Length: 181
Image (cartoon, rainbow, N blue to C red):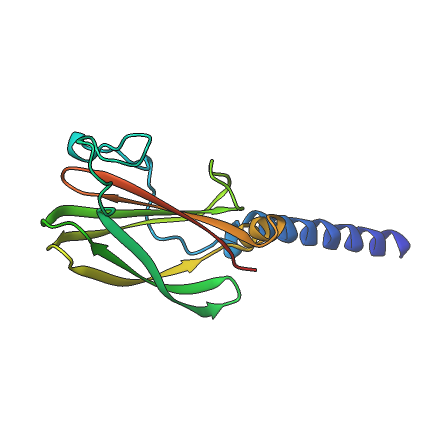
């Protein structure tokens, strides 16, 4: 009888260890609902010749540095579950001209970092065309696996959000660090 009890207990321990491992790794039924996209290459900032700046902050012609071409703000964050947030953000074209073929790429990293780290979420959104001073607002669901949430917890609750705005003629990367837990 003790042999059967020991065998059943061993199976239960193995089963719990497997489920616990999947829980921490974010696999199986515990996997996060991703943005539905697999971004193989994440674009980075490039500055066209007409907006290049010198080390002193002046533009290439010696004048004052111009306003950044885009502003990106997070307007609201609403809880939709323990590891889920609906994030509303706005992109504004701050240029004096129309921006075309706009795509916004966003990656969220665990930790307060400037050189990346564990990617816990990524997504992209096709915006299309924005006239001068026009804005585009959208709400995206950020649903993390328990493993990704744990990575943020291990990083003392800090995340880094890196957003690249890619247009027909330039790419601009914005980065923000936040304490979320």
